[in-house]
Image: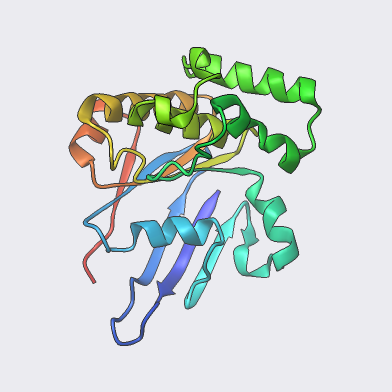
Length: 216
């Protein structure tokens, strides 16, 4: 599913490489966690997979496609098969939960009926269908992150990327997010997360494979 082949990423030559000749293979349907201290390259690896940035050296393959071969105009189509969760939620504060999720209709070209069916199905699957009329400011941090998770899986992605999804949550809310990620993984989705919350991660999820990022 995913292959990093001798990947190096340098933002500032004076500061050296954030990733230095990093190689790793992630199988289809696997659940992996990039672990290590802050600033060690976990988020960089997520951004590389999302094709927000390009490697300085090396190659990255997703479904046997080398990411550097995808032209800019095709990147939105590539990203349709990837769900993404960020630590800072990125929800529109002046729109309800339902309205935040319905933006996928514009991306995927769904009808209003299909959009409603998909949204309510995903919210019910995650156990948060009661929240669809609320605004983000009315929700706890854990509830907001569940909405972000709902948004990420609306389009049935084959890959789910999560960058420090529990970084701003308390242990109880973090545990819930990890359990929901495990539930999504059991549906056949390849899940890749970057996290520093190693203890709770291993406590909640037995199927996860850790990929420690070394100090450079």
